Image 1 (cartoon, rainbow, N blue to C red):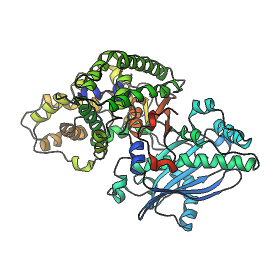
Image 2 (image 1 turned 90 degrees about the horizontal axis):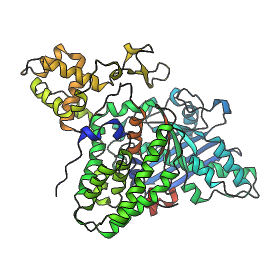
Image 3 (image 1 turned 90 degrees about the vertical axis):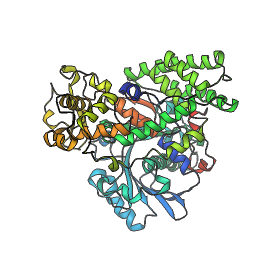
Image 4 (image 1 turned 60 degrees about the vertical axis):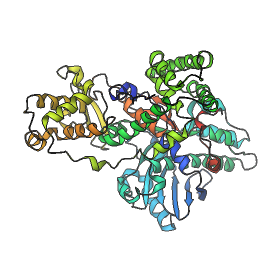
Length: 552
């Protein structure tokens, strides 16, 4: 039986993309798998009794070494902010290419805590900063110093000791450009070095809290239980800065989604499912309920999504355990068809992720296809005609061509870049100034404008001649020829609509990172948790592929 890939006009809407969850394809999971055989070491740990100072952690294999350099700083409570305008943080980090020499550490000590204002070199690969969850950090220190373990319920509510507020790479602030390192096999997957930094930062937070507790009460202090460590991740605050990425990288977005859709298609085409695979799938679904029930947020929007997800997952568990027979032919196809009829979008995509768990042989080879050499596809084929372009638009943008941009609600918002931090922002064009500085992120509106233009243009006109008169539409002409080859390269939705929920764009990207427990703080920024439940560095050699769904 042949199953078709899912229709991009359905899958690429924002509500659907904003319902994606982590999976075997997620970057933090593929990073752990790739580095499980590397030698992990804590090379330097020079902190004072209060936990301030310098530490270095490394991964080494043969002649290759990646080193995380950490600087923990004393700051006042009123200086601690997750906003991008902050200038001080509890800790700052960089991932150094190789073994940092004493001179490197001195140079980095002067630059890394400054973050955007500092200057790094080509020896540094990624840059980040993080703030303590002060209430949790202090509670853990206090408990350990008295010889007892901290309150598990309190820790579960937050899920981390620190949260990062940005992770930079690819040439920003003097960091190494991607072209220098892109051919290294171990970091070929997207964002692999960023994942490494966050993972090693997680270990630093455990070491720091143990160190401070020990210094507070050397006689009675105990270390944080490794099982508790495992259940803690690293938090992250993410705002609109992440949203334009998925608009600006169409072929990369396509490759991420296409790999996910290909995995689903191949799993639906499995005729006979072995007991061990169906049992593993059912175990993962059952165990995942703990993730949902310990997912805390005050966001009304997210609470409704969690409530619907939990209701539908429980309904699904009842279906597969009491009504469904895995001995039927093509059982995962039957399951998928049931989901489309019976479950909300959030639950459909949640179960799609879990379907991948038993099938490493299908999913893992796809990970190597998730990068993209984007520049290759930026040339516009000048010999193609207006008639061909119209056919591409009608086939690939049917949702978008039906939007009426004469209506005010369909062009209410505009994207711009903030003056202070050069970060993307979203505003209301009828209430705020600055729409003259609008960024080219309203792809739906511009595609519609292009379509209107070509309807009154001669069919045989070639692109070179068309663009002489219409150069302001060059960016969407390029996108149209990209989508012809890459069907999942475009969000099939209106990014300037009055009703846009920008965090759907963030969630899409964060699901591919491998984030858990999305906690929107508004419609424009959210908190997440990464690596919660993941093996600790000294356990990596015994890597457990299903760690996300283990009962902890």
